[in-house]
Length: 147
Image 1 (cartoon, rainbow, N blue to C red):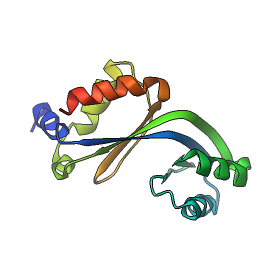
Image 2 (cartoon, rainbow, N blue to C red):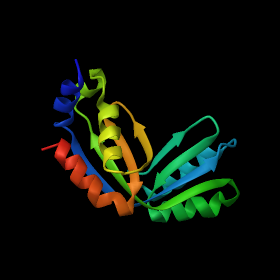
Image 3 (cartoon, rainbow, N blue to C red):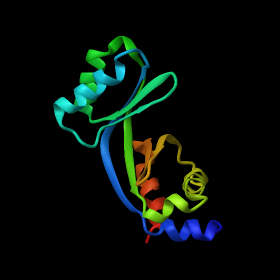
Image 4 (tube, one colour):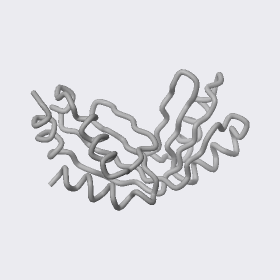
């Protein structure tokens, strides 16, 4: 399998755009993850995401939930990106076994000078966070990949 196989698989992705979203990065302290997920659960926004790292917790949130997280955890906030668009790329099953998917996506966006603020990948989705100012160019670029 080569790059052509990755391109073939990427033609099957489904793209969903969610905006506005706010990315908040928090210090990873005991209880931080639970506090953030409690806020999300309380507002029933199933699109919000929480990703943990070694030193921090990153949350992609609706503006309402972001305001609640900032209020409840103000001393733990490390960074905030408010003017962001979230692209959720639903991957076909064969993407898991195809080398080059992430490389091709990031390379193609970088060639258009689109900065990926953050990116998460799981079994069925790749989630890209870009500046709202790059939204239209991101849409055009991704639409060239997927018919």
